[in-house]
Amino acid sequence: MGSTLPVMKQPNLEIVIIEDEEDILELIEYHLQKAGYDTIGFLSTERVEQFLEEENPILMIVDRNLPGCEGSEFVQRLRDNGFNIPVIFLTARSKDVEIEEGFERGADDYITKPFKPKELLLRIEAILRRLGVILSDKIKHRDLTLDTINQVLYVEDRLIKLTNLEFKLLYTFIKKPNTTLDRDFLRDEVWGDESTNFHEKTINVTINRLKKKIDPSGEKEYFIPIWGVGYKLI
Image (cartoon, rainbow, N blue to C red):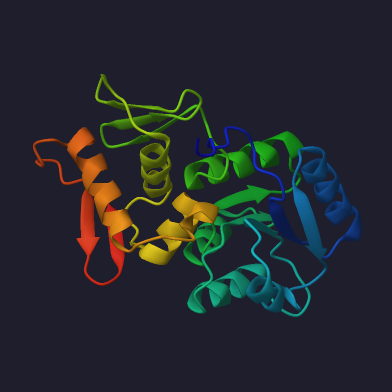
């Protein structure tokens, strides 16, 4: 039997907090750690980019009034350098033009101080749920609905029986729709430790089998092959 998919918040979800006021930084860390997240705090943007290059946190909470480099300018620089980590600005800058500026420079969400810790946690969870990091009971894409508790698939209202491997493969794609997933990523993500004697054609065979189950007529074209790379779910 293959391993089952997680249905609860995964462990070791690390969140970076950049906040120059130590008491506020400690308050944020307290509430996030209490909710089950790992945290690492910085009092400025110094050394943050190096940390992001070496580690893999899931989200950043960034103040804008920071010493040395204004928070939104720092995030814009990260975006320009290819970092796509989700960012929530948590700041006293509350004017409409400042909020617009924050989103234009790369924010995924924007919270103004004073803030409610519960609201911050809910906004974090909303972002992570969209990314598939925190799983809701059901995940939808077009007319596909994956029930992650019972590990079944519905196409519109029709129940489709999938093997555990097929379910994991489809789940992996639905977490990253409209994104090209290369073969190495799919092998590691879906087959994992079972990929020792892995053959390149295994992915093709599994995807073709999955396509026949969810789109027997081939009219919906859920999967697009990307020549020499992998596949994309559209």
